[in-house]
Image 1 (cartoon, rainbow, N blue to C red):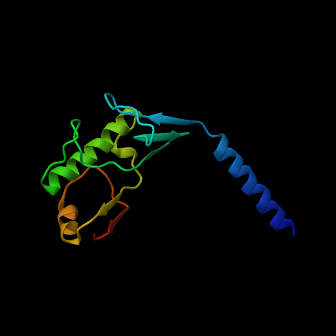
Image 2: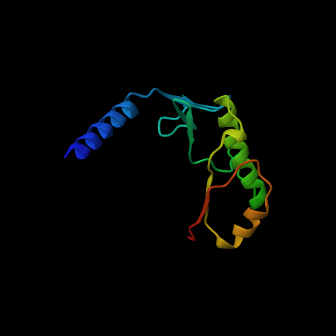
Length: 123
């Protein structure tokens, strides 16, 4: 019973700390604010970046996969820089591909990030 009580109290403390953590929206220079999503969210010293696609500043997506992938990673890099970080601070990158045929092409690219996972979801 004592272990259960300790576990519940520890869980409550962790939950309260997580809710009390200061959250800061990180937006790269020149990026427009959006009501529906944020480029990055900084909580304590952890930056969360999600949904970065391969669009350039004018909203165009390159036709070649490698160029689109490079642009997406450049977009992530701009969020990192806005938070005072670099690719050396990245712990994990997850890539979602819609075509399994390009999986090997992604593996052959030299990128500054360590990839944690790649998920292929065919349309």
